[in-house]
Image (cartoon, rainbow, N blue to C red):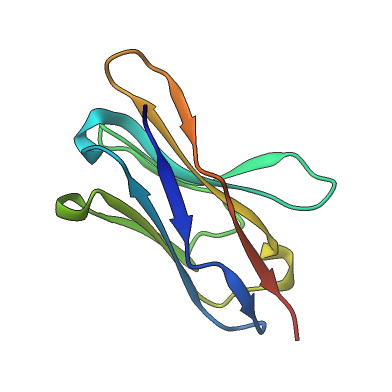
Length: 117
């Protein structure tokens, strides 16, 4: 059973920064897709950033130039560095992965990010 555990959310003022972490229960190389989604109140879940094993990295237009996704393979951890945060970035952020062997989709429990003065 794959587990993805997010951490690092919280309350931050506009213009501030946060770093989210997603610790996976198995090697990151077990996944062919890794990424972050978010869901604001009364909105659907939307893609924030995503890696694929094909070498593609995708960012939502709304976060390009402000958010950076990276990983530590040795720690089986995915990160999302969020800079110049805006109130509209307020949402629950979810880690997402798809396993290579059976293409099963896995989600973390989510971590709340609130951008407010």
